[in-house]
Structures are given as C-alpha cells and as structure tokens.
Image 1 (tube, protein in one colour):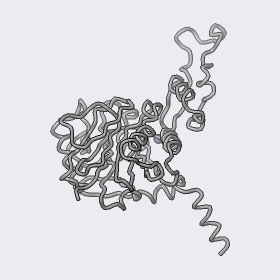
Image 2 (cartoon, protein in one colour; image 1 turned 90 degrees about the horizontal axis):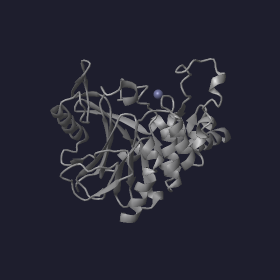
Image 3 (cartoon, helix red, strand yellow; image 1 turned 60 degrees about the vertical axis):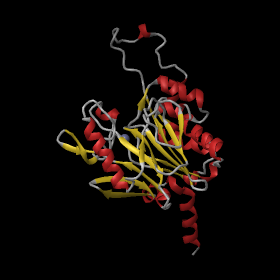
Length: 313
Ligand SMILES: [Zn+2]
C-alpha cells in the first residue's frame, strides 16, 4: 500500500515529461489513407478538431513513394498539394471548415481571424474564436504548437523555429489571446508537435549567442560547447600557432538546440501550467520514414501541417 502510493506520487511528479506519459498522451488515427497524430488532451473536447499530419499516404510522389505533402514546394505539383489538403479535411471530418494557412516568415506576427481570408497573410501564428475555420501551420523541422483555451473556446496555431522561439512567439500568442478574449494562461492547453530534436538540431555560435542574450536559462536547452559559443571565444586567438595551413582550420564548433525544451519554458513562463503542456517525442530528422525534415533531406521534402479549429455547432 505504502509502496503503491509512493510509486503513484513519484509517477505524478515526473508528469508529462516521462516518456511513458508522453506516449500515452498521444494517439494515432488512420483515416482517408493517411495518418494523423492527435493529443488526448485536446481530443476529449467534442467542439474542437485538431491534428498533426505525418508523411505516408497522399497524392504527392517522392522517390516512388506516396506522401502527404501539404506545402507548395518546387518539386511537387500544386494540384497534388490541394488534393492532399482535401484529404486532410476529410480524414479529420472537417470538410465543412475552411483551411486557413499562413505565409510563414519566421516572424512573431500573429493574426486573429473571424473569417477565412481571401489570401494567406504573412505571419507565424493564428488565433480564432469563431467556428468553421481550421487554422494551419506548416513545418518540416520547426515546432508546431497548438493552443486551446477550453473555458472561452479560443484556439491558436503557431510556427516556432529557432527565430520564432527567440522572439517568444508562443508567449506573445497567449498574450494576444488574453488581450482579445480574456484568456487566462492557466486555462490554456498547449501541444507541441513533432519537430527536429535535440539529438539532431545543430546550430552555430550566432544562434547560441542570441539565445544566451535573450534567456537566463538558455544553457539547459543546449548540448555541446555552450559557454564557449555564447561568449564568442570559439576563435583561436593566435591562429598562427596552429599547424593548419590557411583555409584548413577545423570547422567552428556547434551546439545542439532543444526547441521543445525552450518552448516549454517560454509557455510556462507565460503562465501555462506545466501539467497542461504536452510535447511529441518524435524527431523529424531521426524519423524521415514518418515525418519530413528539411535539415536532413534538403529541398526535396514535404511539409506537414498542424491544424486546429472549432467545429460548427
Ligand atoms: Zn533526431
């Protein structure tokens, strides 16, 4: 009895950060020939629709395989992408919703929609309180974030790569929800979808320096020579002492950045309860069988979509 109780408490303390809990908080749904990852934390609301798409299935073809490319890329045909978007709506049972994508520019520009725009505006986050819109962000390594204020029924979709993370786009989106609709951060559920993991996301000194300048706790989000890169001491002060001839110096050292950890911290700092933040454990670069990774595959890859919307009553 005492042991069982202790186990229960310790498990709760680990919370959603433990791999088992993280796996348990997700479900895979297969429909219309494609796979969609859903968070159980959002799936329980009957008035809400959401999902994170994966690679297999769809009308696009890359290296002889059918893939669900949802972004307009050079190698794919526009009609395939449009077909894939229709498939996505069908798979979600959201045929009556209007898909609202953005022209993403790694900014902190946030749009509040009360109707579908005629053309996708430039920006990296979208918010709505009206039903019938399916907000969408496209990614292939960057972190897609979906937010839901279950009390006021406000939802948001965010694209957060290293630039968006540095600009705290997730916190700014919550601020905007607060301002426009009275959202309380403690009522917000945040889902961080698959992006490039700490295992694979190498960045140079220019990125490390900017994070060090913006966040007191940035060190925890990096592996590698953080201090060396953050302080700019990566250059050999006496290059003439090295044996390497000019042009043959070793490449500058790099560090690995954990965008999920950074965005978790930014959301928590904005007032979201840690127990209301759920993150995928899948790394896009490790799992190109299931996802798209621009870093790993280059321009010949697709785009996934993270979508969220309020269903028509
Ligand atoms: Zn990885």
